[in-house]
Image (cartoon, rainbow, N blue to C red; front, side, top):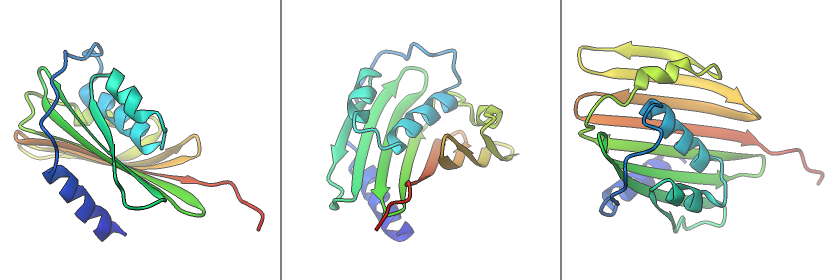
Length: 175
């Protein structure tokens, strides 16, 4: 499954359309990494109105063809002044006992610090941060409201990435 997911994501990123231009975000006081995590959480949640929600925030969001009745695929793009071109891909997979949500945000040549270190402030996540001379790396896991989280983020002068995977167990059903 991970191999198929990886191939799917690489294909989506390669086929990403031209970025939509939008005004700067009104939440400029919030570290961007926290804002991007919130967007990924919404996509990974499986909310059927996520495209409309993201569009209201200035994203050029679309649902793609996942090729499965049990999977939904999304991509979204946005230009943010002072940050750059932001690309998002999300995949929701429904299994008999759980739903997997996956979301990744990438920024090539970010125009400033996105705030990877700020993700360590979230009480629902535990993890580690490593910093080298030019790169911040973070790896976290946690749970909240019946949802398990796995989160990776990194930023160097040339790239920013945030990758969220969530798992939600379904209520037991009678046969």
